[in-house]
Image (cartoon, rainbow, N blue to C red):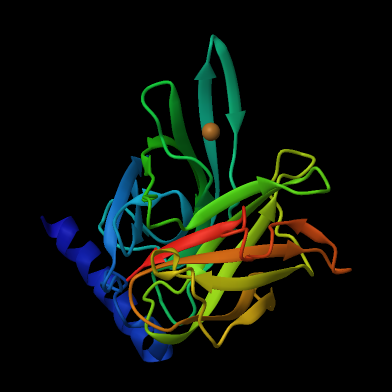
Length: 289
Ligand SMILES: [Cu+2]
């Protein structure tokens, strides 16, 4: 008991000295910086708990912005850690096993937050029973300790007749392209920012971002004579690597956002113009609001 008291005293003095010398270190790091986010999954390994959050609390096909937090055995959240991840899908078809990954970003510290890290994963397929499943691997280095997490995760599809936020297709150049709708996440009547992640199947089974392409935007209302709306601006690549433009919705309801993918020289890679005889592009997203 006496020993404990002395050790506590030493700890208190140490905290006092640190707090006197460095003002920005006095905030305890068991603060809660998760706001408006839901826990998707937590993984425990070697005394640490890794928590993954997003707005829906679910992994879904398409773009997933993910916030991460790492808790130690004392309930404190790590402020410094290096995290790397890789999603891997195992598919068993007719006795053959095939593995593939998905487009994903690096994980980095969230600007202005003490305990949060962030990154994104674009899941290109949903989990489908015990034979077709996703595994998330996360390698963590924290306080000189290395943790390796390999855990199965569930990925759902939100696609319906009126909702599609992920699409893919083979280009005229025989490359497989993947497009994930990032914005508008909260569509409104009028002109909306549209943001899309454009990836391709790389030669090393990786999924790099495609640079310097153009994505043409043509929103239509299939339920109302396939009319369009003003305010569209074709998407070009921004500094974040994603493609940014504008999409107009002149009323609420179901919209099909028809797309044409062009390479840097203006050659059409995938998609067709909407005409009197062609109601849709083979490359499209769907939104209903
Ligand atoms: Cu798959």
